[in-house]
Length: 311
Ligand SMILES: Nc1ncnc2c1ncn2[C@@H]1O[C@H](COP(=O)(O)OP(=O)(O)OP(=O)(O)O)[C@@H](O)[C@H]1O
Image 1 (spheres, rainbow, N blue to C red):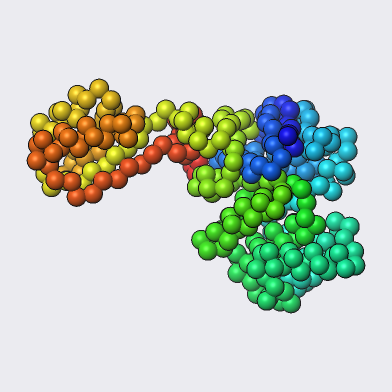
Image 2: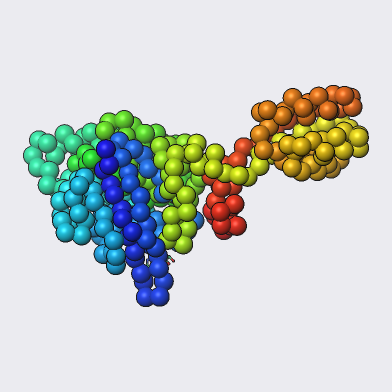
């Protein structure tokens, strides 16, 4: 069931088109990733879905409600974790979450219970009475999340929630995203970290210069990727006959050999790995280690745009 529908959405800032006829759908209970380099238009797209930024053209529906004609009803259904921290340094962690809970219309016992649940969810119960000025970057990010989810919204939108934090907090946040999804929320997650998107998202839209350049599940996008797989072999010696035989193999695109390393670019190593091993053993080459690098979303982006995600 479609939960979010973006139809040919356009946002212009003077001469710059930051979102260019963007169309995609997100189903209920998905974790949908928006992947793109800095400045691709992810935040602008998200702000328009939340009704915080006016679109110049197009339509967005959330739970069947038009953002253009009924932004208040849309806002009631969502929680936004903004890229810039939206917490008050002079309030304690608990007071911050209480403040946002009240903003979302929670009162009395319900407010208290939901604040407790949010604190527990982000692992800040023990620190609830401390001010965030004493917190690490990761703890502040977790508090930022608690403030956005206290009202337990159906839709959670997270704009680069792991920027500038340590790996442990990053993993904690990624696990929280999965848990929120399991608890019934639909999630939109933006990032320029390909690994994060690969590990948590059910489907991904890749955007560049405001345009959607690829859309599908992680596996579908990897399958679309015509980039080669790279096999690196560290060996005891490299006879030129072996290199010649590898080079003329019909499925091997390119072979390079330097000192004790052979690099092979191939369409599908799984099928032809046997052939490679056979050729090397025929020439008495002993393999010390073997590494495979599969094509990923980063290499798909590179093949579509000629640039890396973190240019
Ligand atoms: N208020 C604004 N005024 C003018 N240009 C803007 C404004 N906000 C964004 N832009 C421009 O629109 C483009 C898209 O920006 P946006 O913040 O949506 O990208 P992003 O993918 O979220 O990037 P980042 O990860 O760096 O936030 C960029 O070129 C940016 O400079």
